[in-house]
Image (cartoon, rainbow, N blue to C red; front, side, top):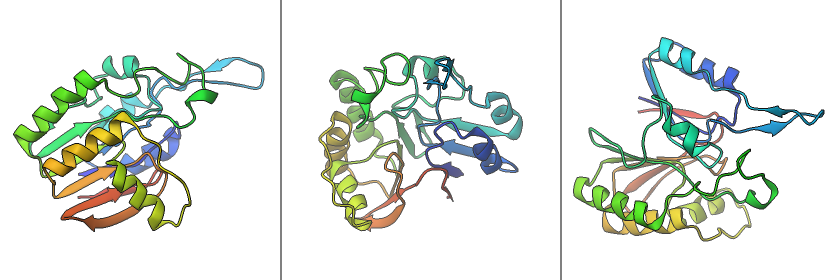
Length: 207
């Protein structure tokens, strides 16, 4: 299985990454429903290459904080938060650090993170399944700190509901592998028995 990092609307590059590959999972921030204003003030909302994704094989995605949650739910290639497949567990969403500079409904959505009630159900399913492989957009709080430290980035990791919940889940069960993106940095390290793989934008790993 190929796992692909954040795409952020760079669909031409993304299509090259799935070319000739039977199946892949893009780990959020594909750019679903993410709109911008061009220099003339016209709203531009590029559509992901869904038809190419279907023709090329099985190429799906989870939701990031640069993906419109409502638009994701209407797309068959989206992997639902809390979805279980074999020994894999999926959960998208994250808190946007740049949310104050973005426009609600255009390129930011209040439900970019799951609610406490939704996370309670996610946590329960996770503990019942005890997956070997976690596929998420963000990661546990302490792992985000480890990613920044790994790259010598002097930055404080803000608290978020997603990272706090994942931290608690990891404390209760440690999967063999945890793949995530969001941080636009790469890291592949074993921490307390779990191999954490952070994929930079448009980076990939085959597992």
